[in-house]
Image 1 (cartoon, one colour):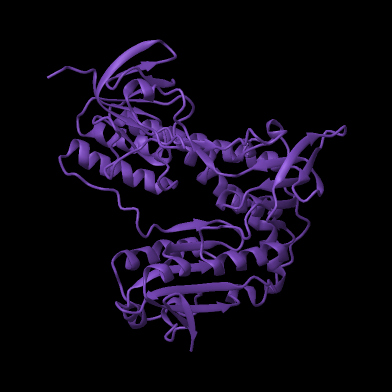
Image 2 (tube, one colour):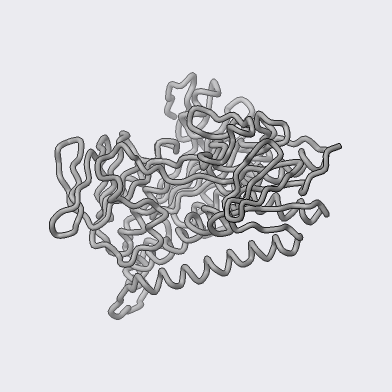
Length: 464
C-alpha cells in the first residue's frame, strides 16, 4: 500500500470541515486541515451567527414600543452601530478560538493557508509551497455571495459579507434579492432605523416557502415601513456627485441610497482549487458533483456543505460530515438524509418551517388536509402590535401523517426545531390531537386544530 503523510486532509475550516477533521483526529487518525481565512466558515464568521446577533439588536426598537402597553415608560433611546459591530467581533473571535481549540485537542495539524490539489492524493500549501499527501481528501470550502458581475456598477455594491463590517450605519439601503438572506437583512436594517427598500425579480418573496408564509410576511414588512418591490430588478448602480448611490430599475424608476446590497444567491468555492488536475467533476453551476455518500468522481475525494450546492444550511453540512465519517472511516456506508429539514427565516415576524409546503404536498399526494390558524399572539394584545401569527399543518389524508408544518410569529424557529422531531418520526395528526396543550402559549394551536380548514384533492381545493 502507498504511504501518505495524512489519513485525511480537509480543505476548508467551516462547520462541516472542522467537524469531520476534529472527530476523525479524535479517532487517532493523522489529520490536517487548511483554511485560508478564519476558522468557522460562513456560518460563524460572516453568516448565521453574526446575523442572528444583528437580528437581536434590530428587535429592540419594537420591544421599546411594546413596553408602554405593559406599563413601562422607556426613556430616550439611542443606537450605536460601532458598539454593536465591536461586540459582535469580540464574540466571533471567541467562537473562532473554540473551533481552533477543538482541532488542537484532536491533534489536527492546522495550515493557515489556501490549499489546492496537485493530483488526487497531493495537496499544495500555497503560503509555503509545501506539498503533502493524503489517503482521503475532503473538500469543504463552502460558497460566496454572487457578485453579479453583469450588473453595471456591481463593484459599488456590498454583499452580506461586507455588511458585518460597515464603518457606519447607512441612512438608506437598497437590497436586491428575495431569499432568506435578503429578507432577513431588510428586517435588520429597518429595525435599526434605516430607510430600507427590497427589490426582487419574482412575484413574491421567499419563493421556496409556503405561500401563506410568503404573503403574510410580505404584508407585515410593508406595514412596518419596508419598501418591497417585486417583479423588479436593478439595471445599473452609479456613484453620484454627493457620494451616494443612484440606482436605476428595470421599470425606469431611479432610487438613491447610501448602500446597495446584493443578495441574489451564492456560488460554490471551487475555482482555482486544482479540481481539474485531480479529476474531480463539477456540475453546470460549478459545484462538486457527489454521489449519495458525498463521494466525488474520484473515489478518495469527498465534498460536503455548500460547495456541493445540495442544501445550503450549516446543520446540513455538519450532518453530511458525520455521514462522511461513518462511510469513509468506520466502514458503515451512510447517506445524508436531506428530507424534512427544519429551517428558519429570522425576519420580523419570524418564520419556522419543516417538511412539505402546501403546494409541494398537493403535487405529491392525492389528498391532503390543511389545518390553519391565523391569530393575534397574546404578547401583542396589550402592546398594540399588529403582527399576526400563523400556524399551519399539512397532513396526508390517507396515512394521517403530518408532512409539513409552517409557522409565522414569535419564536417560530424554536417551534420548527421541535416540530421536526415528530414529523421526522412519522407522527400522525391523531398523535398531535392526543397531545395536551400548554396554555396559554401560541404553540398550543398546533395541537388544538381538530378540523381541517380545507382539503386539496388532486390539487383542487375543497372547503369545509
